[in-house]
Length: 203
Image (cartoon, rainbow, N blue to C red; front, side):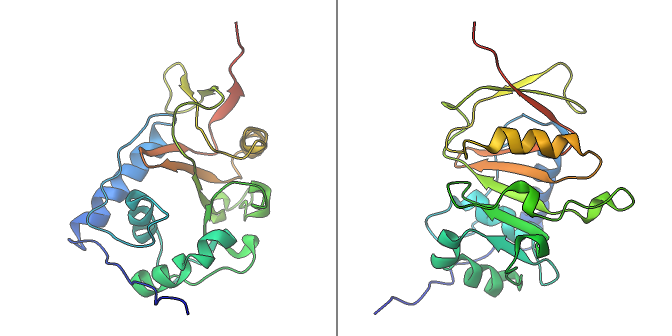
């Protein structure tokens, strides 16, 4: 018999908490490649996810924003937890999602599966949160574009082997495309659609 799902808790301060996290998300997208610390704000939920991820979800999602998530996360009860705390419905198809949360392992849908917006309404695209293990130890990528003075270098560990190619294809269709948040226990890194990524050449 399965144990009942713990409903956890939302922000200790339901006004200030989401404001702080929202500002962090905006700063991350405005400064691509910069690691940002996420204030959990007392949020508690499924233990397989860092508290910072949960606080981001409660900040960005509401009853009008369908959320798509990997099957692993649904099986862990994340969709039920999210529906309880902010009323966000589950999107059954990636194309129907306003937000998505990807473990980004084998079996995850491609970034191209989600709403890309169009030339007239590029803001009608999805925002995708991609979970990774760490911001160090993986393949090094060089980032350039708006919000980056010269370049930034990141090396996220635990992303899908095809993620770089998918992110490059996402950038190529600017102004359409997804805004991406890489999130680990260390915080978040913003990868807006305007950011160009290339693999760092080894010496």
